[in-house]
Image 1 (tube, rainbow, N blue to C red):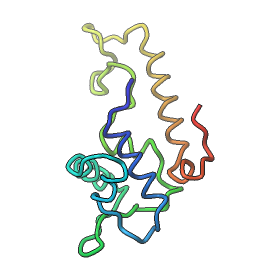
Image 2: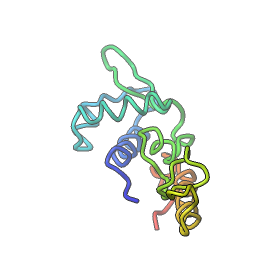
Image 3: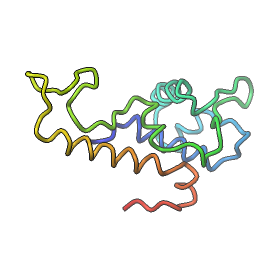
Image 4: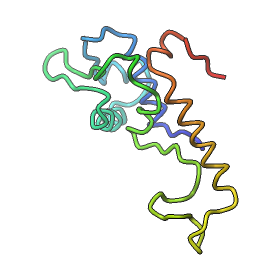
Length: 140
């Protein structure tokens, strides 16, 4: 599994926002410049982050976005899921029960890939924006 650019850029932008004043809105133009991501691409990402309840938009002069809750309560798995990046490692569609094979059975490696996907999700669910900012969680 390779995490897509939307998820990586979303995490990068929110980590930066977590390091700013909580009550000060950050414009997409500011994030675009500091993160070297185009504004149109950030607009797509932030639309999904807003829909996912991770950011709140602020209108008017000095407008932009703020985190919807403290950075210690926003986890990386939430960000990845909000921008529609799949952490699922199997090729099985959750709607196709019991499995993805033509005969509707599970492939021999299903449990292996499902377990790996769970490990990745659990790892990302244990790291908050605040953890990254304070470097509490080391990436190994």
